[in-house]
Image (cartoon, rainbow, N blue to C red):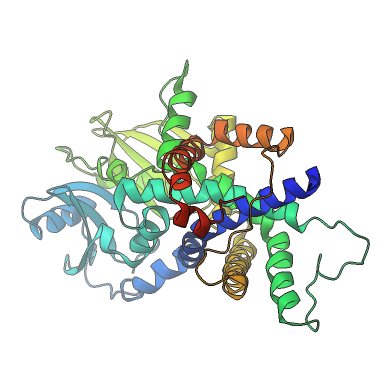
Length: 427
């Protein structure tokens, strides 16, 4: 009869195995796209490099003249927002909306020449963002990513249990890999040791990414709004939410209002747009990647009078925590070191995934998936039940997937001998 500890180890090994089989493709995809998105400011600057040093010819046109020129270049389009240039020789970028599609129009601020137009969602970095957050599959892809993220948390917890040293044989294979004791130990150590060093940072990335998730983020928004005034999130749950913010205006963007917005010295990029909730007001907002540097201000459209400002310090404590988490997640909380750390973590995750795949292929028997076989007995301990229940409560998508797995296993998989044997479910 196998010991209770052996049963627990084997059970968690099976969970780790199945979670890995499901998660590895998603982890590699998220790591590659996430590593690219870490460098969003640099990538944006590279794609706009031709818009940075324009020749200053004659008098500079007014903001409203620039908006009018942009609208004339795209028939039927309405104004959405105006990005403040960082210096006099930079092109002005105006966002228009036409038939539900946002278009970026780059205009020479002196000649009013249309330098370039680009659909907002066709930008390289937006495509990377869509791949990272929803696999370019909309809400369905977002749920898939959320499901993979939930099971990745299970993968890390079970992996740490399997990694935990159970003998006093030194630190080899625990905190550094054994490189000269055969290929089996090499791949095992590469997988386990790299996973250990990346575990904390990966958990942080997964947890800090939950506010973007469709199910978890929507539920969190509803819970947060109970008994509280409506607060607009500065992170988006879906592409549809971002597109819904574009509205046209009948008032003009005056030179005075433009200059007042410049004088705020908000961290770039800074957008001026009509407040969709209050058409008589304009909103100036910083979109800096570091949420702690973001700020907002509201002006009366007619007079240009400053009504109020809102900085990071004015936000609720919960929003501050989430904002700091998102800034670190995107690699911009503490400068280039944050980007470097994020890059190292994504590379480690790719290494863990590849080494896990190699281990599976080397051990996989012919005609079977290669899951660790089930040991006799059902009892695996109260701790496993408590941890599973706790994760299911805070991760609803995980709970739904566990329920579906139980139903499919009991009603279908256990009734088909060939499938049961292939999956390693036979005792």
